[in-house]
Image 1 (cartoon, rainbow over the protein chains, first blue to last red):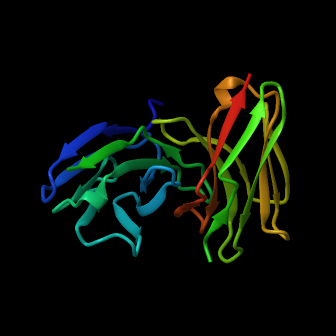
Image 2: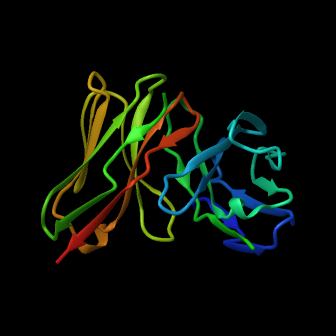
Image 3: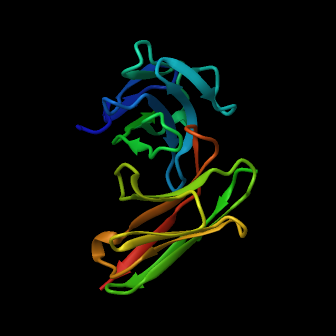
Amino acid sequence: DTGVSQNPRHKITKRGQNVTFRCDPISEHNRLYWYRQTLGQGPEFLTYFQNEAQLEKSRLLSDRFSAERPKGSFSTLEIQRTEQGDSAMYLCASSRDRGLETQYFGPGTRLLVL
Amino acid sequence: GQSLEQPSEVTAVEGAIVQINCTYQTSGFYGLSWYQQHDGGAPTFLSYNALDGLEETGRFSSFLSRSDSYGYLLLQELQMKDSASYFCARHYNQGGKLIFGQGTELSVKP
């Protein structure tokens, strides 16, 4: 069990550019979650998958954000036309799919939009 | 109907016991988890309550009262390394999203 991994760990981009982040969940976990965290706040839910199906997406999530999990393993989160307000830590978590299961978080990708 | 309230900061001394409270709104409640996060690190799972009562895991315990919409995290024998942010998070439905509080920053002094 190698834990949840995320790449890259840090990303600096200019406003208007597109960025893509990757998350590799714990291998036997079918559920995968994306959260965003800004300084001094708790993580905020963005979206989650059960296998390859995207089951819920936050209403706060702009249409510039899209997430995929094509084979039910790793996931990508893309932000198009980045804005300075997108600067945050993007966290991925995974869990088993038996009822209420603990979510285990990856180290996050810290995004800075200049 | 999803928000959680917890104190923004708590200070305690090494060896002491500290309690971090969390109140939540009741709609769609399935359980309460607690996470620890050090500066720049990932949230780390500490404890979880679905039913009323106390769950003990080493120096950390968590309590839930569903009738009072209230829970707390109890940290015993505080160590300097316990200085971190602590988040309560409610399970909004089975297997779905977690809704986090804004976090309590714990400072442990010598």
